[in-house]
Length: 130
Image 1 (tube, one colour):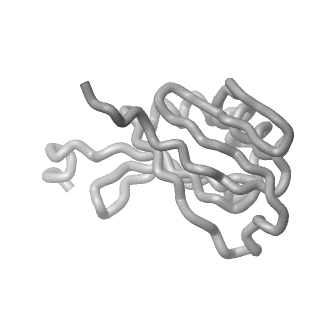
Image 2 (tube, rainbow, N blue to C red):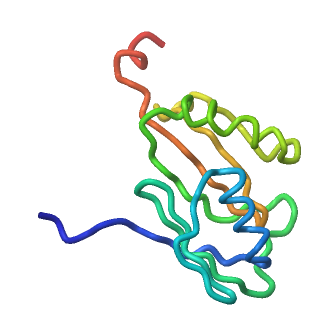
């Protein structure tokens, strides 16, 4: 049995409630734990720790660290999330799209400027056809 369970990175957010609304209402995460200024969110095997801090918003045009979530089927995830993704500002969603590095990705910009990427490997048979 392995000892490592998962990685749960911290996302520093200016407005905890705004971040929670984004992750729960748009991306389908749940909130198993919350206290003032902090929340743990989870979906399937992925978790994030949200920490409210001042001066953490990215300046316009400068995205911060991309959190990459590997998924089995990015198109199925997109189909599930599309009605909610359509409510985001233009330019905050890209994909799903095939990338030259053999990944198919859906990119979503979070309210504080973090880029959340969902991706899957393109099967080698499809890469060979291209």
